[in-house]
Amino acid sequence: MSSTDLPASSESNIGSPQSGQTLWQRLAAGRNEKFFLSILIALVLGVLVLPPLLFLVTGAVTIDLPGGVREFTLQRFVTIVNQKGFLASVGNSFGFAIGSAVLALSLGGLIAWLVERTNTPLKPLAYFTTILSLGTPYVLYTSAWLLLLQRSGPINTYYKQWTGDTEILINVYGLSGMILIEGLLWSPLVFLLLGATLRNFNPELEEAAKMSGAGTWSILRRITLRLSLPSILALAMLVFIRSLESFEVPALVGLPGRVHVLTTDIYDLMHRTMPPDLGSASSLSVLLLILVSVLLYYYGKLTRNAEKFATITGKSFRPNLFDLGPWRNLAGFIVAFYFFLIIILPMLVLIWASLLPFYQTFRLAALPLVSTVNYKRVLSATRYISLLGNTFIIAVVTASAVMLIASLTAWLTVRKAPMAKWLDQMATMPLVFPGIVLGVGVMQFFLNLPVGIYGTIWIIAWAFTINYMPYGVRYSFAGMLQVHRELEEAAAISGAEPVTGFRRIVLPLLAPSLIAGWLFIFLLSTRVLSLPVLLSGPSSQTMAVAMFDLWGNGQGPELAALGLLWSLFMTMIALAFYLFAKRSGAGIYGQG
Image (tube, rainbow, N blue to C red):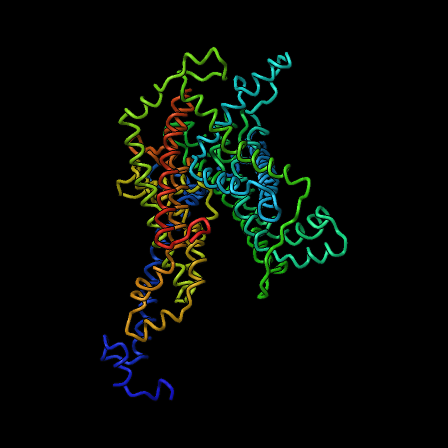
């Protein structure tokens, strides 16, 4: 007997809470509830995403004339393109992005292959390196490498002492120095993402090649790399785009060396004059936005065509590990050196710098100067307590708002609710916004609104919510795909409304993805500089902005002390969430 043959009284007894409604009436009500919820989420996403873009474009193509008249013009674009340094900035941006992507992919890819596909020792060090790097602010990491590689740093100093050469070995304040630091900064992410691809690689083709007499390096070159090519190219494009949008390394390394890129040119336009030249900054931002949009289009094509190279099927398998034989110890040394290079070496120079009244290369004569004065100064300064509070509030609000909106968006998208495709596109649209460009757009938006949040922590939280929405949606979407609709259908038959089913069934099952996404966005919000450096006021600065100012003022030792304490604080928070998630059954970092 079909459901349409059931009498109304029989249907009304199913889950008796709504005894006056038939099953089809409840389903229709559920569809209406999803429709209204879709409209609500669409309005929220529209208010978040569209105004910065609209005001950014409007500010770029219009000019205010006397009498309150606004005139359309493309003159700013013409002026920017014809400027003497524009082509040099474009060339530097591309050279910096390409070099960083190649270095990050080479280093991170090598570690990923050694850890996931070989019998190398010390594998946990690679994962430990990645987790620790997530808690280190970009400004602090860049500053550590500058202390190591600058003219008075230990590497150049020891080189001149040992060789007697009067010239330095490394000039970090140039394009090569920028590439080195940015490539090292991105290598842990490459390890994580490429490691997942190699971990799920079907070994049948490799085993067939091995039985045919092919050696390890031949199999790696002719099979593993070729079948992993779509993932490698997509990852290379991702790092290229993010390096093109990068601000911290170009600002701290490039500007002192007079190496300009597009992001630092936008920053310069915002700080060259008072009031800021918002029109020119908007025009240059639009050009960078168009460039990133084109690159993201091709990135999307790369990821969409990846299924042509699929090697994972319904047949179960266990990826085989290559036996490196006599090279095993060398591989273990490479993993250990990677940990030393990414974590230990920068931390050592920061610890040394934090114990000195002024920075100098390590030598025995400097030991009498060692003290904890910088730590006492940081811990006793009320300003730093205020900065900690600002950063913590911004990060908590951002992560919570993003995951709330993202979880609802992912649920409506996966369940094919009305406007599902449009919701997904709106939620992922902020990917095209480089941080510095989004900052200009949000600034333009709130300068034209009679709302007093400009210069407060709330405008930064607003901008971060836009910026990290795509990450929250991806985390939620991945978890939502694993929740079968049968559970919600059973709840609906029992009389539960869709939102009730989402709250009581879907959200608990999504907890692992939501907690992992919340923690990831929380950590990102404490690390990034490009948005707060434009949007913060005197009383709304974040830790990243304070570290940037300390470095600019030549207060390296105080920056090192502040950065180390902050990184320790972030690590403790990450560890607390990890332990909580592990006890509650919500897995983070791949563990339940």
